[in-house]
Image 1 (cartoon, rainbow, N blue to C red):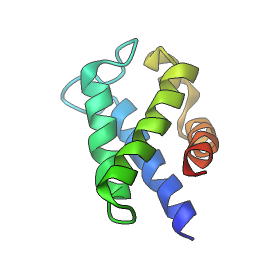
Image 2: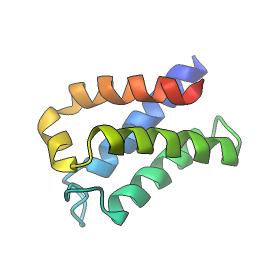
Image 3: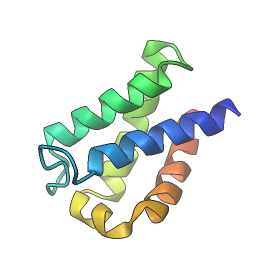
Image 4: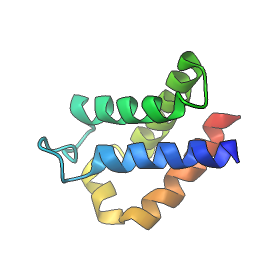
Length: 98
């Protein structure tokens, strides 16, 4: 159960970071500083309720690095849609838990 919560937290943080509804454009190509900071703040904030702060930071960094490596251009992510992003990020998050 805890692992599924971590995955959902990571997904929520990731979707927020890539959302086009923010006042700043997080979907700019090549993961802007804003996108990275937003992802980390949301992910660590949510995962931190289930992990120690250092563990949450490491976990979220791991997921973000995997997503950046797989999708260096965030515009590509916007084209995928939430369902595809969810399945991709869940697989990456699982690797970061173990």
